[in-house]
Amino acid sequence: MSTLDSNLFHAAVMQSWNAIVITSADHAAGYPVLIANPAFCKMTGYTLDELKGCSLKVLQGPETDAAVIEELRACLTEGRFFEGTAINYRKDGTTYVVHWNITPIRDTDGVITHFVSVQEDISAYVRASRENRLLARALDASGDPIMVTDAQERILFANAAFSKTTGYPAEDLIGSTPSLLRSGRHDPEFYTALRRALASGRDFRATFINRRRDGSLYHADQSISPIVDDAGQTTHYVCVSRDVTDQVDREEALLEAATRDALTGLYNRRYGDQRLDDALERAEALGHPLSLILADIDHFKQINDRYGHPAGDRALEEVGRILRQSVRSRDAVIRWGGEEFMIVLEDCPLQPATELAERIRLKVSEYRDATFGGLTLSLGLATFAADEPRKRLVARADAALHDAKHAGRNRLSVAAPPGAAPG
Image (cartoon, rainbow, N blue to C red; front, side, top):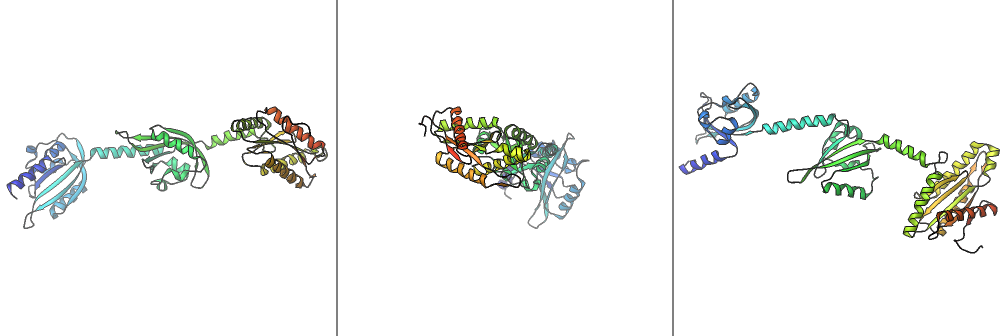
């Protein structure tokens, strides 16, 4: 090697950010240090003068892994490349974790003359890893389901509570995305609001309806938080949730009791009033048609008096069932009182409303009961007119119902528009 090459090599070693030490291949002398760059001296706490001529055994101590040192000696003796990790000791006695490799240097005849070692103090990394493992164990011990994803929403961590709640083992969750929990019960606007909040660096909190691995649904109060780095870039998302299925079920049961008629399962009169008011408000605001049907079971008192209240209850239940099955899911079917029912048909003009009422009348007339035989309905239909008060609309439908009964029952009567001359 020329003087210039030697100088360049020396400069490269001494200026390297990595800790580099070069030793002699003299086994009998303990492979004494020939060159140690400033990074190596800083890492060990020894000066170059203190290291020169010394064996690097000075860096070993009670906590140094004997198995690693044994492998190191074998590699040096046999002239093999070595790579390992162990605890070393600085000059002041403090420990650090070093990861290093040693490469044998041979002359032109293949004889090993030196060893070059590149080393790195990985104490901070090991400490962080231990802290991360401790944190992971702490999160795993939490009773609340916790999930961590990367910026691309790939799941990196899910604790035991999360696996228990969702039914997915951790190995099935890692690498997948939270979309596997989607139930289809949330509209696109829900997820738009979620992404908008996270994109702006804000937490998103909501009650999610999720699907477990077995297909069952559960409700979870979830808080999703973006984690950002020093540059303000989102690197991860953390989701902490709580299974509130039992609470939601209780609330829904209370709501059911407050809004449903216990016998027929239809809306009760109190909640039906609210549904009618809401429907009329929408019809007025949007200019959409709305039709109202009032129906009454003919001769219902005779069924109760002759066959008893269980038969009367069965008649009410069956009529309620026929009404529910005959209308759209968005239509409100209400037990208006006693044997009287109301159907609120939004966005439904007179002609289709008339056809629906006739179909309902026919279906009820076709029903047969083993105890009391058949049933019939009388129905009154009114269509909402612009600016018509609610009370007036209901009165017109009620008047049409009475017309149907007075005309012989088991028929439909359609109310004339407000202000029309009597027919």
